Length: 473
Image (cartoon, rainbow, N blue to C red; front, side, top):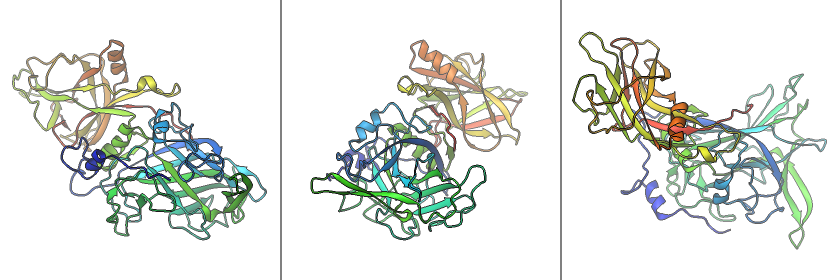
């Protein structure tokens, strides 16, 4: 198999060298906390293909159940995955191809999985340490598990109704009388990348490795990537002992490479495959605005985004410019204290026009901050305003009027990223042929200060596009 490598410029980025267009931000504060997100993907299709082990050779692999990218097959490439216009995942930004071997019951029934749910985190598994991660490189391929496994694997876990996760095949499931046994196979992928090779070399060197028990990557695999924990879910009826449940294995081939006989093996041969298909902006957002910020994003990974291009605090009647400040303040007037308002301007993220037809685009203006005065939880509002202003000159004497129908944001004193839903304002701007939008943010409660990080801070405001269709999980 030909070795796939990443370019020198991208490698320089990963090493943090000067001139790199993207350097991951350091985590806020001294200790990086839990950063995570997840995505649910329905079962897509079954094929005897494996784009990693047998690329370009259809029909000679074990039977695999595919999730996510609807075009995944033996001929899949990084480019073909990115071009796909459909995905079975709930987030339109995820065109990743995920796959695992088909599952067969003791009576011969091949069971289609219900879905797979993948958790992404900043954990350096097997350690419990949180680390700064790099975005997934486009086209990354990785595997977990052992096709020829005969016993428990610490990277593979099993769960069935009435029992917790275990590395051993369950023998005492407790089926629900109505819905039967739910069975999950969990797979923890390696998180340390060599920084240059996009795919494992079959029969040779792997491109990925696991951290040690302290969460440190091996010297030859220095790049921490997000942890991927893939869980495939099945309904098995009233079965309680899963010893006889099997997974598809590579078929027997004749001298001409044609399939002679299909084969099946025990659950200890469980394994999973990951062919990265998140949009590049989504992969960067996941790393920089979820995992490296220690945020639990749940399903909120952006399809595309822009950090704000300009922002400033203005104070009523004050001719001074505050465009270079590291904080943005919104505060209603109180006594002799004039009102402070926040102005932000951003380019509109692209991609809404090419979303699959069943996905509805949503735009969010996200800022990091909260109520800096007391513990009250209240609504503040963002109003669409003219873009005819500059960060370096705007002041309380020349700022555009801040009024109209605003987008509400309910917030408290916790300092964290929060989002105004500004879909209507962005759609109106797009309809008018504009590629930029601006907003003014006003506080609530006389004298109460709401404070956020500016683009000059370590927690920049962001305007992002997201398209999510929640699926059963």
